[in-house]
Length: 390
Image 1 (tube, rainbow, N blue to C red):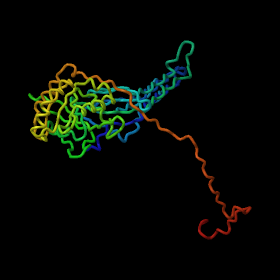
Image 2: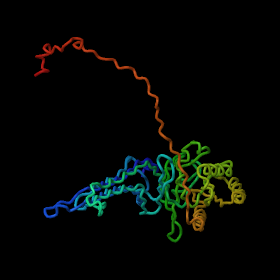
Image 3: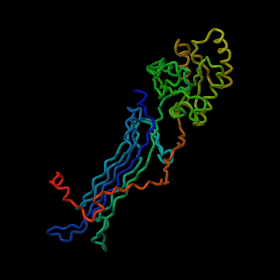
Image 4: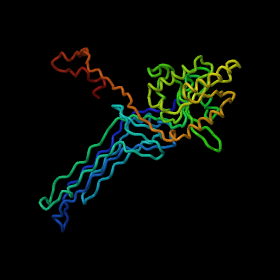
């Protein structure tokens, strides 16, 4: 799918259906003049339901559907006839979609597995007919319950891509090249920064017909938390990743410094990301000469001891270190702490719409005065014969 069709953020207005009113009716028949109350109950209003669908991977189908409204319940009838229930509105979303309150930014719920359903807004209950209010002292009640009102709310849907391994790095670090080599994905690759504008997914084949999912996240730069570059918008997609693979080019002057910058930007976005398993891949090894390669091999062990994470030297062009990288990633994925991924969804910032309450002084419209208005009476005779009165 084209990059422009990847939508991971939509805001919707949802309203459930209101309940139908109960019926107030007294039964009358030829041989039963005092049949008593027989008003039926009103129908329930429709629910707003969120459902996960594994066949979807973007919120594109909801981009132009800003209002989700369920139908109201029907009114009750005589002979204790129940009103029709309102039709539910089901919002199908990809697995991994998170729901926030559209006004406060508060986290509401999420759906992870295919087929999971959550009722976002319940429809109003139908009112009771007067048949329910009969008693020995009130044998002909002439009242019934109205239906419950509908519920309405603005919601924000955010998609957080489900993947096992997330690639983190500066622009042009070789993330897209690595994904194209280890999987069948075809991300855009070029010699200029920010070629990847949307997350890309790829299935990495491993030994014995095993596989895992890898996500290529658009590059982040220093100051992304303040909105520089593409900002931190796409970092939500690595919150579900079990392992984070940091990629730093071998041509970088200070590999450790660049790694710490990336780590600091992740901490500003969500400190929980620092608890995930991490690996560091030094990419573009094919650009090194013999002296530079020896120098990196010499300092690789020092980096592992200092950062306390595995460090590998790889090249997506020549294929150097790719097999070792797959082995290291698979070993990390098999660890018990990486099997269950718990996410603490932080509230999101919602910018309220500011309305200018000051009313600007409008200029008084110029009054048009017709010539014949100054006369005491309209002289219509002068207009006869020109076609307007025919």
